[in-house]
Image (cartoon, rainbow, N blue to C red; front, side):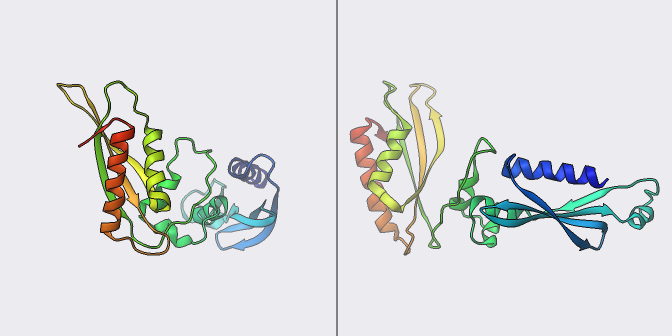
Length: 213
């Protein structure tokens, strides 16, 4: 049982931290398992406690009616692992509903390397922008993103494609984006945001040949 437990959990550690990760077992006490261990991994030159585990105490299984069974158990703190893996400084961020935090972890491939980017403590301002795409198919979303970030600079927190629409008669395509504006050092006023947003509308109409709705 010990061999099965340890080989399984070493495999888990290798899946999370890579095949070459260094691991070590530390004897420990837990109330529901005996013997018990902690698994530590060497991460950024420091030993990181990954999980606690052990062989289930037989009296617990007997009292539950599984008198002819033996088993092992483990428990790990996902948030504390994520803090190390993604360089997240405060565990309270995991209860955040701030899209600037949440969207950093929306990826198609779970193996994507992610490093947390500090978010502002000041509230965001979100303005939507909708426009018809040129019918010559010359529009590129990356060009739109570049223009928005060129005009808004550091106060552009996120650009999110919110909706795509095809007109049933004309077959013209419309895109709607939400642009999240946010300052790292102070609260932006809606007037400031509207001025930046208005400039974005003018420039994309001129440079991308789109028709702002």
